[in-house]
Image (tube, rainbow, N blue to C red; front, side, top):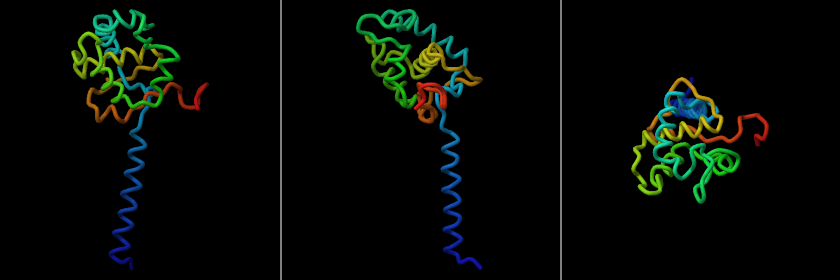
Length: 149
């Protein structure tokens, strides 16, 4: 017969184990199709209207505004949580009117930037809520692919 303390401990260990497994299963990267093509399209239109004058129509950067595609961009953001990327963009861009864009608009622009960096689109949109975005990391390298750590 199992004592009450032993049963409680066993249930606690089981819950902790299942909880950790659930968190691991929820973690995603930018390689997991975390935005839709439709969302990237909306983001592209917003990008051209709000961002291209500084970052260039092809995201290549102009003068002091950095490129939003390529190796340097990937290296700078590798490992960063998507929610942090959205917050950084939202509070600092566009440069002439920081905070002008809503969280949804910035999320759409980020979907466009991800698409232009070669990340695959999926069936669902990248959610605008920070809580969901915290479960997704920008990963410059596909797991197990060339250049992956």
